[in-house]
Image (cartoon, rainbow, N blue to C red; front, side):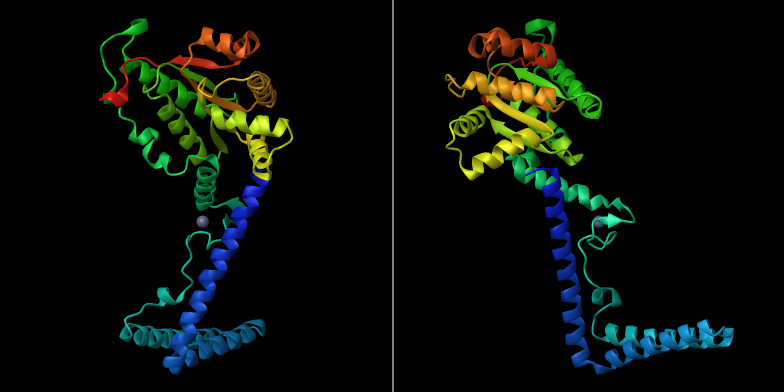
Length: 321
Ligand SMILES: [Zn+2]
């Protein structure tokens, strides 16, 4: 699946929503007209009068005719309103109930995409990203800095200030992503908020219309190995396409996947492909940098140092509190 396929899927969904809204409105109207035939008559009369007016306008119609038309239409509309009111209904209820009133479920306003398009796109990305509901909880709006100690600890900075600094850098990288890929590596012990920060960044980018894929290192390397040895399922192939096409790839928990002989070349391949394509990557790992070199090779370490902003997460395990 790539961006174009996602876009056409969204536009297909718009068409379905639009059709449904219009079908339901038609159904409601038919039911109503069956019970109150006068409403049908009113609609027909307004139509006929409209045609008459159009004819007279074409034949240089006079103002009087126009005034007559306006008055009789107003009267008819008033009558319709009264009938509907007596039924406890409004005229607006007879209109198709579109999910978006601005674009009437077309996704477009003039030649531009409607605001609701980005919302749908983000929702699609949430589903495809493998993150789904977790983003409702783990995002920048819900970030609680008070969980982090203000006491200066490692590296002459408090966990609190460190987290503020990382947030600032992350937000800057998000703002700047069109100019420069967001490549960040978070390392540190478990329970210091690395995955949480990854999710915050992922959601922020998806909300801005970027295509994000999240994968644990384990799932990533299993998929890659399956494909390399030609026993990849259809699903694995789809996943490989996503890994290549997404705007941001989040690799969570690097180092916990149980490294084997194929992991290192796979990882090197992904790194290189994405770096060459100027596509962003976000990596979290429990390994410190020297150990990344030991486990995955010096080549990989130098790629990371040369292309990533590296941040250390410090403090004590938040999950203990
Ligand atoms: Zn809209």
